[in-house]
Structure formats: C-alpha cells, structure tokens
Length: 150
Image (tube, rainbow, N blue to C red):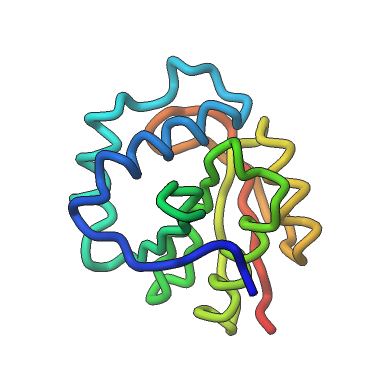
C-alpha cells in the first residue's frame, strides 16, 4: 500500500500547488530568474491548465508532495513535479505510471536540457529523446521525449 494519497486538483489548491511547482522547478538546474513568479504560476493553473488538462495531486498525510498534469487528447505529459523533500521516494515513478495508465498508446513531453535528473528518470522509464528545441516562453534549451506506449 502506498503512503501517498492522490486526488484531482480543485481551485482551492492553486496557491499551495503554485508554491510546490516553483519549489520543485528551482531544483531543475535553471537560473531562478527564468522561473515565473508565484502569481503567474497561479494564473496558469486557472488558465493554461483549465478544463483540457487532468491535474492529479499527491499527498503524504496533509502535505502536498507532488503533482501530475496530463492532456490525454494531445497525448502530452505536461508536468511531473515533486516537492524536493519527496524526491527519491518512489512518488515520481507512481505519477509516471499514472500517465502511462491514462495514455497507454504513448505520449510525449519536454524537459529542460539542464535537468539531468529528470532526463535520466524519463530514459530509465522507457522514454526516447526525439529532438531538442527552445522553450516557447523562457527560451532555454529543452529536450523532447516520446514514450511509445504499452
């Protein structure tokens, strides 16, 4: 049995989720000046991650430990973010498996090129690098991955 509990996001979760998102993003290897402020992340949760996205929160007791954002209609894994305190405890693997279960025909994602930890994680879980590019908003280098499906 998992020590983590999972549930869909609600609008009341947005402030805590934005803090977790920023905290998690700060360990990716990017310059912190490229990270959006909390107010922008909260806005994106309401606007960019609206009805088309499925957001799943992970909790360890009352503490928000991570989240998954997927868009099955576009076969996109948009986000797996963990609170740094929960890295290395199997939660990322659980969230990735949720994405695989929800999109068994395969999916794609991108991650910052400097995020070596995430790149190793995705490659270990069967994803294949397909190309590189530039982040559409921040401009840093990103790496695209595909998971071919079950």
